[in-house]
Image (cartoon, rainbow, N blue to C red; front, top):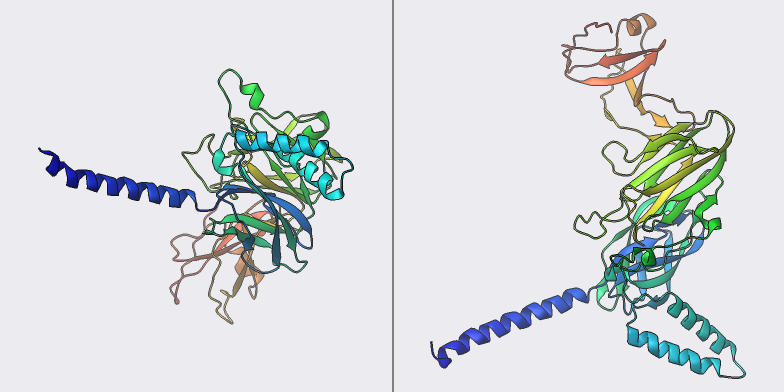
Length: 405
């Protein structure tokens, strides 16, 4: 093949390379947020929130779906290079020589010291190393529940992350610094070592605690409970950050453990049914202090291993079954269903409780725990320590059979 025949091939390759490079630059320039900490707040409060991501230059707004939540952008800290760090150090030296110092100079020195103290040359994950600080205000009448949060920059809107509006008092641990990459043989240099007074925190229930799990770390919380209290301890961790199977160190797999004051394990959970976030339902055996702890199942950690744990005598729906049933007026099939909950005024065992109205006692006693060959099971109820099922078929062809345990 001669030189002239090669020219179209080289030209086509150049176009492909240029297009791929342009698309890669365009993708890298899109704003991205990998975590928010804390990932929610209580109604009627104002707090500072930390957002970790990349390509957040020019962030000027944060959008939260729904009503009642307003966010104000405070400052943005990009991931500095070694050259940026050196220039800030030189500027800091010049400011220290200034006499007298104005309030503006003192404020600038504090900001530079903070940036230099928290700078990490080799972050464990560069995609969450850029930090934006915002101020969140939640109105007292803001509807509680899950929202979507997005960062707005000059390049557009970022991906959404989960943000929760809660109703219980909130407690948040100090935010983590950017994690350093672990080097083989020098892993200890990348670990976070908490002061002794920060290893275990004391809380008052009911409340919601917020935290981040670092590598090889366990977060513990001590509280006081009374005998007979039926506590619900629910975790939100994997619900907050999207599942990314190929990420390193991966995704959080939270483990929740409950101890008594002497350190004896009372309850343990690493998931709740089909959900990977654990839940502990616990009836307090006696007055005293108790401790619950959370950690990753294999003790991984990073700044985006964020969690929210709510504890208290709170309603908790365990399941939903037969949420709809036709009401036949004037018939023994007139029935209503209500969810069985855990927490205040809730039964300790079971899932759902059907409540029958307009039925004679004799008819109700005819039904045993199971109904056979029916087209629709309408609900369950408990009476005299036994569990009964009520079945209903379409039309007048219902046949109820009796079965004993």
